[in-house]
Length: 444
Length: 141
Image (cartoon, rainbow over all chains, first blue to last red):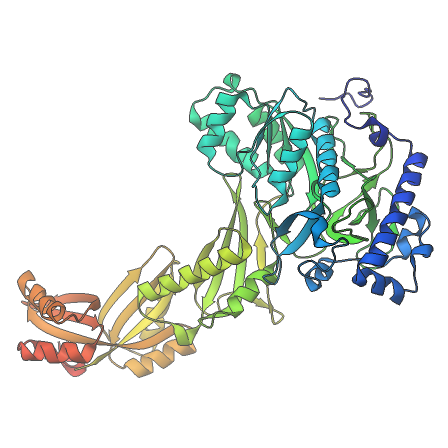
């Protein structure tokens, strides 16, 4: 579609040309200054960071520029859990105006807090994201990401209002109404997970509504991994441009990085979130173009600043200027993880979360198998679990109620709908004493 | 009057019932009655066999999930009204029937019942002069 040498820099809108097109030397100065301030804030306000820095023999004076970042220790999801709920916040709670949370691995969610200024930053980076996707004040943005503790819905919402678009906060689900409002309101931009976009595409073609009666022209899709093939499928079926966006609630939510219409990597808003790529084994920083684990340091966040936060997402960075004119570093689509986390319908799931729920139920053995599939473009999750022999009853109703109890406790704990299947003991394969926990049949 | 029945948990996949019967067949276990209760996901095979404890151990050794459950059995003429009468005697006393199945031998119905309280059920049925069967009765049929 694009001629690869064509220059788009004069035709594409850019929300914040000053920062998004800054020369890299100037950007480095900005980043260094912001990092210094950030380190000072966490050193004096967050005991956890101060202790960790002191253990490493570091003080705020040790960090003079972004080149010193590698000296600092990493932060992990476990550190967030250990400091649940507000232990890593760097401001008094009276400064916090919003709290979001994502499901955690041990029943405890990962909690993030925003100051008023953080919400402004978030709106800014989301305004950049939407502008990257060519959205503007004349657009109708249908936000079919979930609203609530999940950052997707509200993140897009604030960005959409910031650019002056007409925001339709329909939230996730209720496909019939999605299609009706898309038609009646004339939505031009769709924001949701890529798998839901495909699901909607099928539903639209079955609804009898003609494509020419819809005004949809672009979609911003993220919160789960998707392939170039999926992108082509969405673009063909919905007849729109499909733009990849990336974010994680710990860092800010959506708005960490996004593609422009050139679709050659996601521009990282590195004047707010400084990315590094590390080798997940040696923890060495890798140069541009090398695949490794993405690590973020937030350099403007106040509520929950994160220093060298390990995302576990695998990707690579490219520092060349994009044909859209932006100079911000670009990351490739994330297609893998350096841990066993699954992303199902945009929700994070660790097998250990399932295990901890099952361990609390005496009627079953914690021998289980999670089967992830994508049917009709929607992720499905099935849990096969072995019935504990001593508790086997010959009444269907009791087995059925056991099955339902497992299903309810899991759904309320992991926040993902699933199908539970009881299987015979010793039928789930054990390999080398340890069971294989997950079969992921989705093709990324 | 209490009859030992084997209940076996079965996944809904082809060949599982055959597996059970082959295991039992290998030790010449005889089957008087058999029924399968199934849902979309799994089933419970219920069988009355000649040597329930031996059959249970045999199945356990072959990695089946199996329990011995207690049921009662009534013999009545195979007209519907007699089956209805049996059930009415129980429901009048608030004894609930968890499940029941039956087979017919000549003019008689052999009814198998699992009740919320099998002993109360036996007493009630005896009082109404119903013909209760023992395990050995069942194997003489």
